Length: 122
Length: 198
Image 1 (cartoon, each protein chain N blue to C red):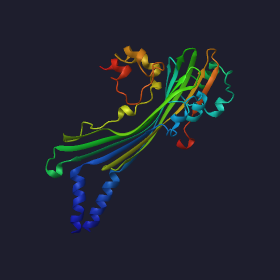
Image 2: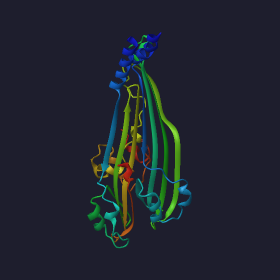
Image 3: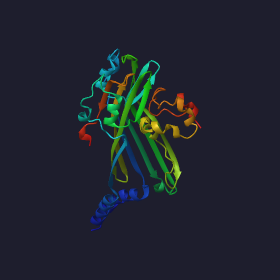
Image 4: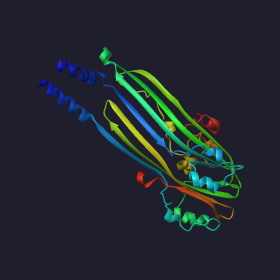
């Protein structure tokens, strides 16, 4: 009887004190550079104004000589935690959705690239 | 006999009041192996198609410099009370942190061609400590906060509002997009940010 009570107490203690946690954090500009939004961008033709109209203000503007660069960044962090009082474990995975556009002296698009984290991460 | 079997774990739970914490962080995506060896002379478009946009970028007098990075950070801490030794007022803490980093730095000329590609990888212990503290462990003995900070682009527009002396050093700060880039975890008192050290 005493043994059963002890086991129940221990099990109850472990259950009461155990917990879990989830964590999600997004920082940066809204991710507007899905493939559909970028359809129609043409190197040598698309202007900086076109890109700004589609994507909005960037995270950073960089100038190098006559060139300008628009840089867009969204930082997405997801984490999980296991709280067992005597042992706690946390895992956080941070990925960077980003897009970059280069323009020449005439404000025409010369190069661009985008990266979106896999949809499975959502 | 049966009762004594449970006494030890119960006593440990009640008296040790200790625990172990582990934290694992991953930042960015793994980079392709040996990319730096075949990048020489490649056009910017090809590099961006392979690696995606860089995490760090800056204009330079010769063109651009871009950085891609992938980090794995592990932090572990163990703490326990010395109550079982009769020293109720003391706790013992131990902590350790390890980092595996991969940083690819590619320089481009004004013609948008790779002028140089360099890479550094490391897997090392970046900190740790042990402490005996009264009652509860208050002082942290290991911290990786400086390695987990958001990328600097988020604060680009607000840089002019930084407190002194960081604002005074604005023309030299490596997060402005025109004065180079720096690796994650670089202390404020190093390189271009030497002047920011209070």
